[in-house]
Image (cartoon, rainbow, N blue to C red; front, side, top):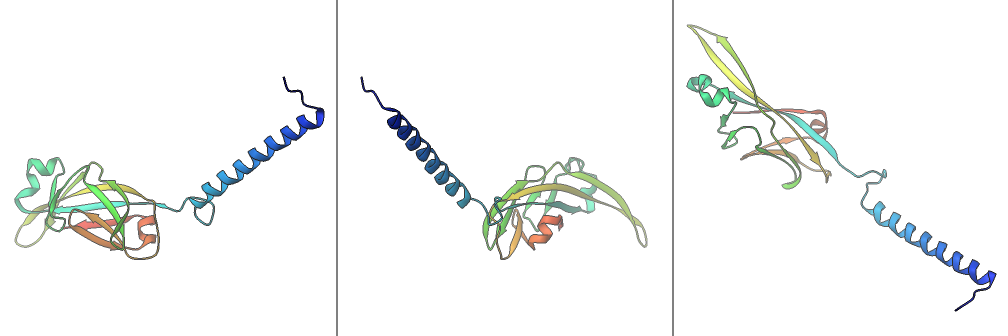
Length: 161
């Protein structure tokens, strides 16, 4: 059995504390490399609303009542769950999907008669995990609409035809 003197015990304890301190410093350095300059992870929550106008015979269809709206601009039927991609200079940096649509109906008064109009409104939020400087687009189907970073942070209203 090995017996340590008092100084040997204290030296062993000191070496143990030094190893723990070095490991903690290394872990802090690795963690800080994954954070922004302000100490927090860079990123923001983009959010907004997508509106799709519905016209003609489609206003009173069963699809419209479920808020499934055909968008020529997006090249798809817009509905709950459709992916929303936030791109920066053509590279995806965030994403989410559309909420359940809210159907808004009304009439337009014109000459010689009035007509029905409707639109479906879908909300979304999309965490942007890799922000930067450049051109942001909100991509839904084939539609790619440009917005600034401030617009995305403050909420956008995207109207698709």
